[in-house]
Amino acid sequence: MGTGSAAPEKILTNFDLEKLVDTSDEWIRVRTGIERRHIADDKTTSATMAFEAAQKALKDAGIKPKAIDHILIATVTPDMPFPATACIVQERLGATKAAAMDLNAGCSGFIYALSLADALIRSGNGENILAIGVETLSKITDWTDRNTCVLFGDGAGAAVVTPTEEKEKGLIATYTQSDGSMGRLLMLPGGGSRNPTSLHTVEQRMHFVKMNGHDLFRPAILSMVEAAVSVLEKAHLSSEQIDLLIPHQANLRIIDAVAKKLKLPREKVYVNLDEYGNTSAASIPIALDEAKRKGLVKTDDLVLMVAFGAGLTWGAALLRV
Ligand code: UT7
Image (tube, rainbow, N blue to C red):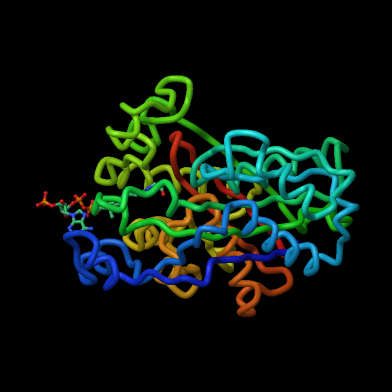
């Protein structure tokens, strides 16, 4: 699986945030594990970062843009509601044969994209699928709300999913789930058909992320563990066989709790949220690409990716490299 990633150059540290809201580096580090995050400038959008990550992934896979059959972009921060950010990227890449669409499954979006890519390939509907997770969360962050503004960051990760002759290689199983009854815990209420953009929605700050992090904490752990166990069951494998866990990077305490329940030692868990914060749908593909480039993912390794997010949604994917 060819991979690539991109993140804006500008860094915002916890100390920078101390100047914006009533918070402290210590609170953020201890409660979340985050130390800094990458923040987009005015010219950087989800499409520009997705394009950069996609170019790197295609190079890594040795595949030309014209050979791509589908572009799937997981994001909650598209360039605009339509056209799809995937179509903007399709044009920039010159992927003239590709179908293109965005999908919104919150922070689980990249897992959903992998699951769709796998299904498209298995059903004979395509050979080369470009799956991207990208977010420009800084542009929907309320920089006056300390409950949320310390958490998020921007970035993109991409993967080229292709068929493999070897039965036990590549994406060996995926699992996806949702529960809309808890959707109110994490939302962006303004700008859609329920609350169309108006002076009222702007004044009420309804175009920014609203999150009840406290009430999400437990469901996040439980659902990520459920997804991990379910995908392992599907593949008739056990957690001892995992070489690397790549969890959604929302909170180090959540990651540690999930790893503990799966009985995985810390050295088998990839963590980079100290550097990026929570980049929602981009967090897993960025981490996968970094882990590969650091030599932490070797041939025949079993990688478990697991995510949880807005919707609520959750899911997992098992990759044999
Ligand atoms: O991406 C997928 C979806 N998101 C998640 O899965 C996020 C899950 N939740 C979390 O990661 C954590 O709940 C948070 C990091 C969001 C919050 O941590 P917490 O330990 O659950 O804190 P809390 O919300 O219970 O707040 C504890 C205290 C409160 O003060 P009082 O009421 O005890 O006086 C907050 O007002 O911490 C206060 N607080 C802060 N203090 C300093 C909240 N944010 C901050 C802050 N700096 N930035």
